[in-house]
Length: 224
Image (cartoon, rainbow, N blue to C red; front, side, top):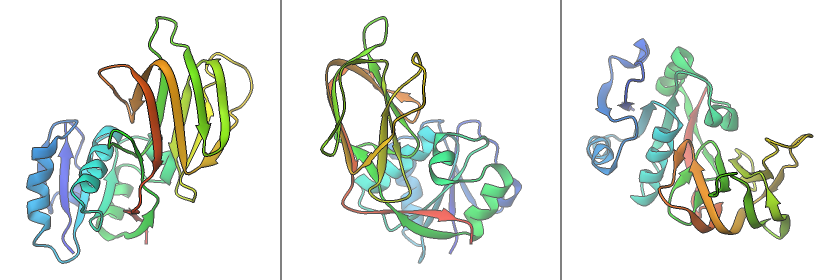
């Protein structure tokens, strides 16, 4: 097994990865960047793609693997700092993450995606598109109504355990803890909402958004 490393943007490359096959890409890589990496992985018996960058780059990699039907490729993540994805999946950072990317073992996990075809690795946040940012509408987690009316926002997080995700009303302007509801899917209807997936904001407001478990799992590299 010879991992292919995709270094995204200005993310520092740990020493443990410098002897590997390293490709450089923008901070948010696109299809052409992954096509080159996939071409090299085709010749590897046990393909493994290592993403050095942020949650947006990590999510872009999983999205491309899903769309290209290459979910047999093991995916490792080497972030410089803690992030939503590291908390969601217990991923290490820096040199420790690099060592795991080289010698760790992959395990299957539920893949959470949305109806626009984007994978989620850390957290999605949904707010209203008006100036106050309050979210108007209704949301369900499976058959459980999460809210109906007006709330500060909505948070959606993938989980390593089934059913695959959890969601909660954002309490950023309210007191009290989050009331997380676990499920297989989250559905939102709203007159106008702004969606932020893994730090990347959608260009246009949406009226509907659904996050759900994909029919295939993905392979995340963990410590041995």
